[in-house]
Length: 136
Image 1 (cartoon, helix red, strand yellow):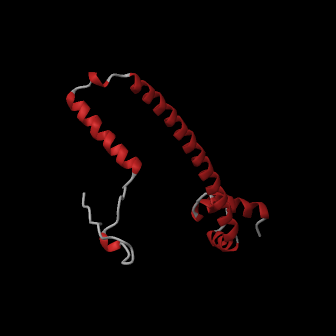
Image 2 (cartoon, rainbow, N blue to C red):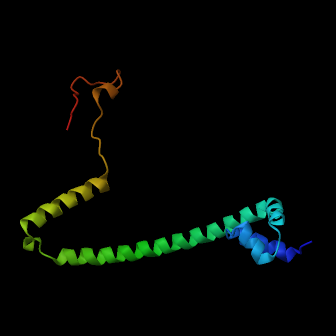
Image 3 (tube, one colour):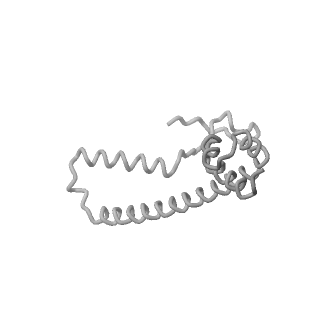
């Protein structure tokens, strides 16, 4: 019979993703016993994995927030420098590229805009005598 400390160590190692063969070698316990423990302690193992994943997720989210704030700060510095620059110094090709990039960014920021609905979507009871379909 194995003591509770060995079983707890099994739960820790299994939570960390260790294989039965590796745990058997580490704890000097038969693989059959480990498989039995795996069934017996499956909820403990799942709960420990969930706790570890939550901690990892929290750590990653925090680091993502820090990274996003750092990037925002860098972007602000770049935009301030760009505001001081004179676009007249840019080549014609570069100006066209900049204009196209700005158009795409504006479209992305504003999303698709709908100014009206097709005639078929206007309810019959509404006044639409002067309405017409507009296709851009």
